[in-house]
Image (tube, rainbow, N blue to C red; front, side, top):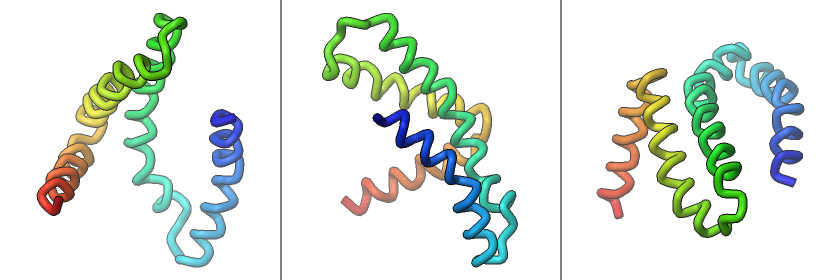
Length: 102
């Protein structure tokens, strides 16, 4: 079901971008460019999590979450550090700001 929802979201993405670009006056590439680094960083994370599920097919959902969340976060952060280190620094600063506000 989640795969279907994700596929639908990507299928209608060009339409939403076109509408947003038309109403804001921004070009479509200006809307897409900020998404490139996070999407590229998510690809190795997705691969690692799929591999985890393949290697532990009988593991329960809780165990997959306990292992997968920190693993996915570490791989995403590492990939983002390689692809767009400034974006990672901004994300870390945002987390610090949120934590400070409590």
